[in-house]
Amino acid sequence: MKKISIGTWAYSIGPYQDNPVPWEEVIEKTKAMGFDGVELGGFPPHPNPDDMPTKEQRAACKEQMAKLGLGWSGLAANLWSEHLIDSEDNSGYLNTFRKNLKFCVDLGIPAIRVDAVQPPDIFDKVDPKTALKRIVETWKVCAVESADAGVRLTWEFEPGFAFNKPSEIIRIVEEVNHDNFGVMFDACHGYMVADVGARQWGEKETLPGGVLELAQKLRGKINHLHLIDSDGTLHDNETSTHAPFGEGKIDFDELMPELIKNDMGHNWWTVDLCFWPNAWAVTEKCKKAVDELNVKYG
Image (cartoon, rainbow, N blue to C red; front, side, top):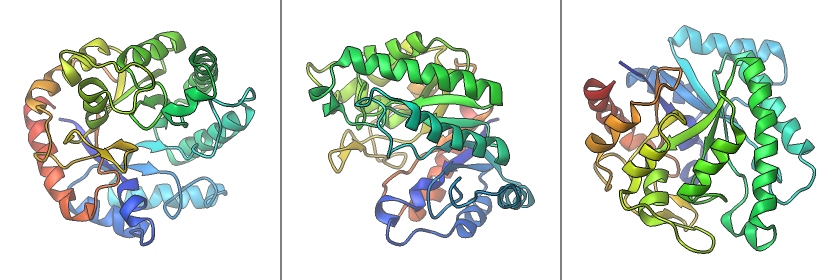
């Protein structure tokens, strides 16, 4: 059976931006619902490297989780103020990445998430070949350094960021070409990329077999899973709508047998309710849905 976590950003950004759920409440409630751990959104007001600069603070946070019997499935690092594609100098990005990597090491977080940072229309300013080169060269460095630190590096593709076509996703993973680097396969992003072709720059690229075919093409390259449904829409015309299970179009009984063919090197599945209004109200429902998938496929 898999361990089940949930992304804490669901309770700190979007609808919760002005009234975030306190950290203690998040972890106590998720524990009460039967989650095995959380995936940390590493930005205020929840634990993050800037608000917890000392080893003592980090040790206390680690102990707090241990006392509840909760683990970490990963860290969504706050890299969004950096310029990965439209800058010739990647030192700022790398320095911020390293700060978050050290945070992972200190808290015992086993994985760190990255994305392309900038939206698809960045290609109006930077040609795709240059953009690809900058991303690949930067993530090669990140892959090596995170491997040395014992932390897995995972890239989350999605409509809201550049390089969101199936062929681009495959190409980037192949060009980074490091055992410690892989794709975070978020089911709703996979649907919006492969079935809808949302927010793709230039000519739209979808797959006849949709999200299942994308998972098949990425087999062996997936090292992290986010499980949530998709209703085929975008949230605020930016990123995929993370619809609760049963409120979307994804056939998980078709998709899961393919996803579990990946040897990800760990035992976590993560529920992602990013930007869903009143996420607390559907969290328990989503936990039960994932538990059912876990019985079938875990």
